[in-house]
Length: 208
Ligand SMILES: C[S@@+](CC[C@H](N)C(=O)[O-])C[C@H]1O[C@@H](n2cnc3c(N)ncnc32)[C@H](O)[C@@H]1O
Image (cartoon, rainbow, N blue to C red; front, top):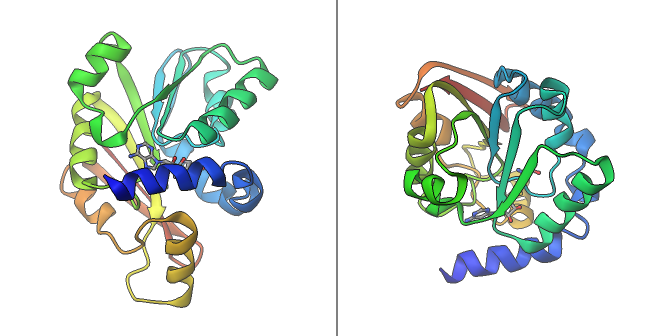
């Protein structure tokens, strides 16, 4: 709990410079590939957890053309303010931002907050390496995904200790060696994985 509070406070502050430090350019290729893997179609609903400053929104709109719905969830007010600003600047009308804890997102939460909406695809990017109880988060995301819906996870995986790994852990306040994609592989159909940045970032996907 204390760790979670610290992480949220950290991201509230980090939000001020996040879009410069965690540059669009650095993550462009894995992001573009991850969102391509969603196979998102017009009028569908995509859930993005954690949505951070909303760096994915313009990518989603390339597929949705402002139809359907984008639901962005994050726990940091600072990060959500930045994403709200992007929504306002672009005058996007199909995005809903919700402040919530990833570890509490389950079918009851969806019933209460999203009125039993059908979630067609889910993108979980750079979140599971930091969330407590991450296996449970994956289980719950699969639970709320519509049958045959696609889940895509983009995150770090640096198996052996390295300076780069230590830097990522320090700046992201998470871990870099959690067996996230290995866990997903046991839970989905049509599992697929591709790595980026000399193998340090993975994009894994599958169908429920
Ligand atoms: C490295 S950022 C990634 C944001 C975004 N997905 C991106 O790729 O730019 C990690 C995000 O996780 C959020 N976060 C941390 N713990 C969380 C939790 N328990 N529930 C929801 N969001 C959380 C932070 O506020 C932060 O925005």
